[in-house]
Amino acid sequence: MSTEDNNEMVFGKTNYMFLIAGVVTVIAGFILMSGGGSEDPSIFNPEVFSVRRISVAPIVVLVGFAIVMVGIFKKPNPEK
Image (cartoon, rainbow, N blue to C red; front, side):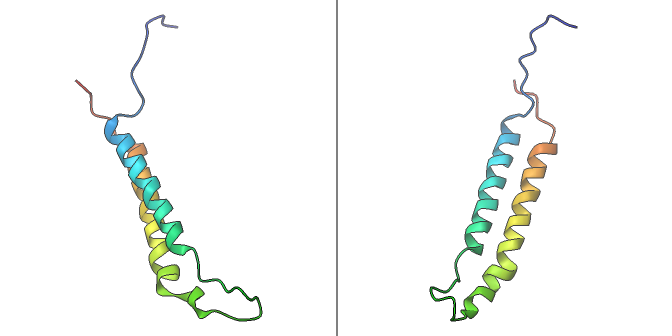
């Protein structure tokens, strides 16, 4: 075991920026998925099956997860 102080961070600044951007993108995708429900359960609202909720929002969420993965796997640049 070494007694040296190793104060290096696992992630660099760019990694954290990618992580934050990815989390914000995932949250935006889930916000796009929300809504479209009906106040009365006996009335069907076809807005549930809109293109935004069925196609766009899941793609935005997957892009957000991909951005988070890039933030995790990217090698941090040595800060000077």
